[in-house]
Length: 86
Image: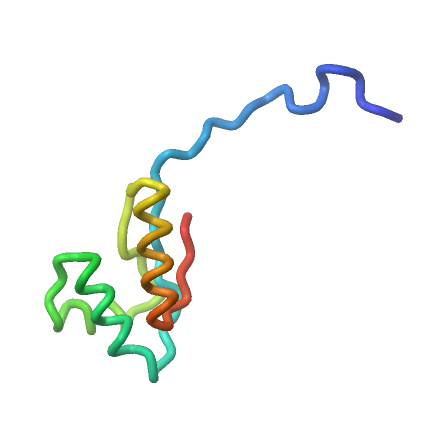
């Protein structure tokens, strides 16, 4: 049975405007490269960035724009991290 006109798509979800960048995993041989990117994207020191990569999965950035989240994901993935945007 075909849906009646107006039935499909009645509720429109609000467009999401803020995103979280989550680092899910880092290969052990890529850890140094990912540390450099994490330090570049945040104000974390070396010790804090190291601690961050040992307790994954973990959110790196919260409540950022889609563009900023995509840029961070691109940089982290290029360095060897597995990243998700929520």
